[in-house]
Amino acid sequence: MKLYIAEKPSMGRAIADVLPKPHRKMDGCILTGNGDYVSWCIGHLLEQAEPKAYNPNFKQWREEHLPIIPTDWKLQPKSNTKKQLAVLKKLISDSDEIIHAGDPDREGQLLVDQVIAYLTKKQSSVRQSVKRCLINDLNPKAVTRALANLKDNKEFAPLSSSALARSRADWLYGINMTRAYTLQGRKVGFDGLLSVGRVQTPLLGLVVRRDEEIEKFTVKPYYEVAASIQHSENEATNKFIAIWQPSEACEPYMDSEGHILLKSLAENVVKRIESKVAKVKKVSEKNKKLSPPLPYNLSALQIDAATKFSLSAQEVLDLCQMLYERHKIITYPRSDNRYLPNEHFELAKGILRSIATNINKFANLVSAADIKIKSKAWDDKKVAAHHAIIPTEKTINIQHLSKGEYNIYTLIARQYIAQFYVKHEFKDIQVDLDIEGGLFVAKNRSTTIEGWKQVFASDNKEKKNQNKNTIPSLKKGEQLFCREAKLLEKETTPPKHFTDATLLSAMTGIARFVKDPEVRKILKET
View 1 (cartoon, rainbow, N blue to C red):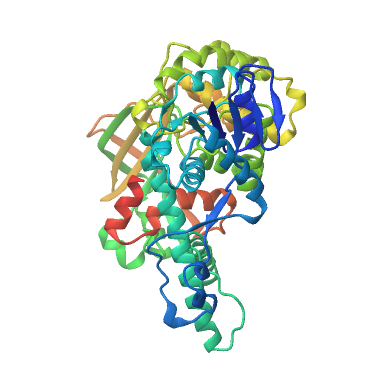
View 2 (cartoon, rainbow, N blue to C red):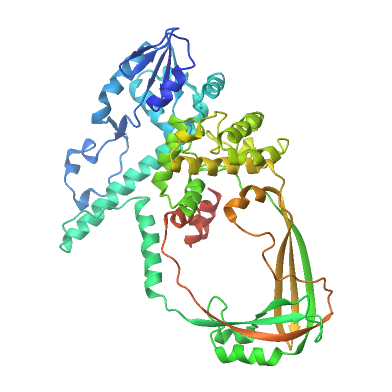
C-alpha cells in the first residue's frame, strides 16, 4: 500500500479528495478505495530534547555546564501528539511506498522527514525510497497535478538540512545564552528569567536602538535655497525651480546629512542670486523602464498589508491561511519566494478569468491584460520547493470572505494581474545651473507609458505627472534668468518608531544594519 503523509489534516483531506473512493475515515488517517492511506502530522510531532535528556546534571543551571553542545542530537515525542505518532508508526510499518506531502517549505520538509526517520531508525532502505509531493494549491486539479509529478525525496535533503540547522541553532543559542544571562542576573540580585533567542534578541536590539536614537534626537533647523528660473527677465512663462547644492566650502556649516545649519549663509545666497544670469552647465535626459513588482512572498505581503490596512504580521498570516485552506483561492502562503515556475504560465489565463469573476472591479484590468506577456517573475532557476503567493483558478462568492480576507486577496490578485502589463516607462530630466558661481539643480520626472502602474492607480490615488516642475527644452551653455530666490526653512526629523511594516522591512533587509562586510555580503545574498 501507499502511505501519503501530509503536514496537517487539511492537506491530508485535499489529497484524499482526489484519490479513489469510497473513503473510510479512521482515527488519524483516511483509507481510500484502492487500499492506500492518507495520514498527517499535526504540526511538529517531535521536538528537540531538553538538556537533561543528555545529562541529568543539566537539570540544574550551572555555569560550569556551559556551553551545552550535544554530539548526538535527540528528538522526543511531544506529549500532546503521541497518539498521532503511534498511528503513523503502524501505517509506516505496513506500507510499501511512502509519499512525503509536507508543506512545500523547509520547515514542512524537515517536519515529515524527522517523523519518517524517527519511526524507521533501523530501516534506512525505507527512507531511501520516499517520494516527495509538492502541493502549493489545495484545489483538486492542482493536487492531482502534484500527485502526478512526484520527485525523489532525496532531492530535498538540502532543504531539510537548512531547517535542521536553523532548529539546532535556535536550541544552542537559546539554551546556552538564556542560562548564561540568567545566571549572571542572579549574581546581581535579579531572580527572573533573562530569555535570549537567536531571532528575538537581535530583533529586540533593533527596536531598542531605534528608541534610543529617537530619545537622544535633537531637532535642528536647516535651510535650503530655491531659485525660480525662467528664459529671460521679461518672459514669465516656462518657469521652473532649481535647488542650491552647497559646495565643499560650506561643509563647516553642514550636518552629516548635508543640510545647511547656518541661516545667514543661506540668506546670503538668496541675496546674491536674485535677478542674476543662470547658465546651463549640463542637461541630462534618461529614458527608463520599470518592470512590475514581483508577485508576493509572505513578508512582502505582510509589509504591504500593514501599510495599507494596518494589519499585524500574524493577522495577515491567519487571513492567508483561511484563503488557502478554507476558501482555496490562493496558493501556499508561508512562502519566502517571489518567482513562479515556467510551467505555471500555462495556468495564467484561467487564473486571470477567476480573478475577474471573483472581483468585479478587476474585470476591466483583466480584460486589458496581455496574456502573451511573460514577466521576469517566471524563472525556474529562482523557484525552490515553493513559489510566490498567487491566486488560484477557483471562483468563489466574494460575499463569503471577511473584510480582511477580501483585502488580502485583492492585494495578491492585483500583484498577479500586473505581470501581464507592459513595463512602466518614464523620463528623468536633470539640469545643472551655474548662478553666481553656485550650483543649482532642477529635476523632473514624467511618465511616457503608464504600463503596469495603471493596475495600481486607484490605490496610489496619484495624478499623472503631478510633478509640476516642468522643465523646458534646454541646451548646454544657454543663459537663463533667476527672477527670485526663496529661503526654505526646514527641520530635521527623528527616525520613526518601528511599525509592523517597517520592522518586517528591516528584518528582510537586515544587511544594512550590519557593519562586518563579510557578514553583510552573505546577508545581502540570502
